[in-house]
Image 1 (cartoon, rainbow, N blue to C red):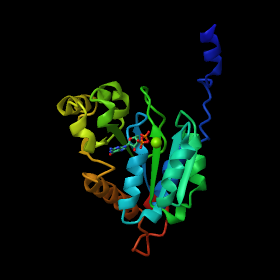
Image 2 (image 1 turned 45 degrees about the vertical axis):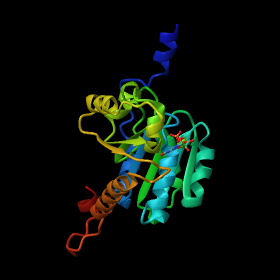
Image 3 (image 1 turned 30 degrees about the horizontal axis):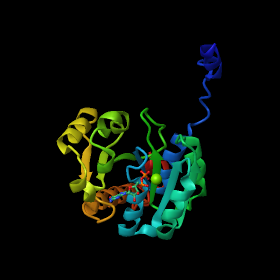
Length: 238
Ligand SMILES: Nc1nc2c(ncn2[C@@H]2O[C@H](COP(=O)(O)OP(=O)(O)O)[C@@H](O)[C@H]2O)c(=O)[nH]1
Ligand SMILES: [Mg+2]
């Protein structure tokens, strides 16, 4: 029976491999050590994630120090869209974002040269894998309809920021903003909502400020000690 096959496929509950760290833990540790901010961008297909990354790279003060990882079944195509603005783009052709794949992509990035990693992961209706990120940002497009925050409430639970994209299309489509905001609030009362357009650039500065602020904060936490007595590396990285 299906249940039997499924049960057999599960890891045995007893004797878990405690000695082996999970890939997301390894990513988080490595990024903390390198002072790299890692942001997971999630949202339904077509919610403007790649367009947003593209517009973001054009506006960041240090775009050369950014790494991008794109995960979806045709990720190579999105990666090609981004390459003109970013030298370090990794694509993972998979419908499901997995931390183990992200870990391998992180290993291919020039860790010493970057201080920000943006991970584009297509979000589904169920919760998605922890990818070792510092923060999660959810994208929803005006053109996708005002019911998407309610449908994708699982994505919202993990998100500290919600980007409502395609605001330039707002006059052309029926979109009840108060309903959308109510649904976001119900799923995650602390999430900030930024409205923006990747095409016109309206609203992008607030998002860029958020990103730059967190990027600088993460890098500062990795600043080497000024006190010569404080030589033990663990004193910093906790
Ligand atoms: N007018 C307008 N179109 C946008 C905007 N952001 C994305 N799009 C378009 O929406 C479609 C889906 O965007 P894409 O970035 O591929 O979505 P993804 O699947 O979430 O990566 C594309 O045709 C984009 O050009 C926006 O701010 N304004
Ligand atoms: Mg995309």
